[in-house]
Image 1: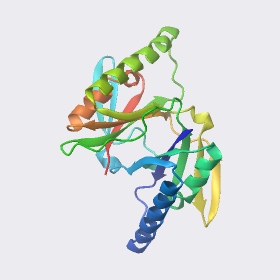
Image 2 (image 1 turned 90 degrees about the vertical axis):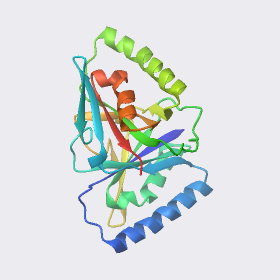
Image 3 (image 1 turned 90 degrees about the horizontal axis):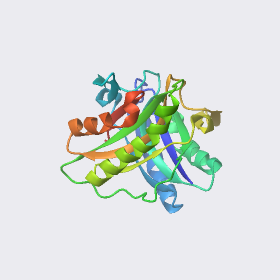
Image 4 (image 1 turned 30 degrees about the vertical axis):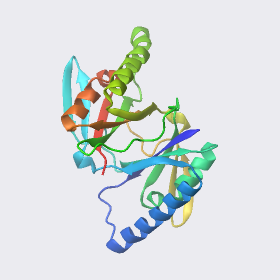
Length: 237
């Protein structure tokens, strides 16, 4: 089973150089351990939320907003994709990640695990982006809209895959199955639900490789969810 680890921290948190050095060492050890156990498929840090752009379509108009999809104390700062036997195993790995000592790690199962899980080498002239697909918690679609969203999304996936701009992506399992790990004073705390209570929830993600931000935003604006939700686009480090 594939699981996404969504790393979230308070970007305003003050962390001194010594603590960062400890975190870097712990992260290196964690990556070595997950590689040895053959559970880590890929992962990356994301640029700060100041580099994020959120895309929406309302009444046929494209709306671009600087910043993340929601304003909350903790913001998404990176991800890992793990292949684990169970949610408990994925949570155990999350609890050992140094991000859990700084903020929180939300663990979500992938709804439909793609057959291709390895990312290709990056083309030097491109930039990679994380696109978070977000929907309102209380979204209400008509029967006709609900019937169209699946085929429309499938058509979007076929198009961006054929163009080579989408490297990986998946719908995530419902948020009521999410669990979040934190480490406080050495104690592991596991909480049901996402890392933050927000009006919009992360429903899926796509990893894009585009010539520039304009192309990535155009790809996001063509996603069917943009009509009633939002797409946060943020470059990788």
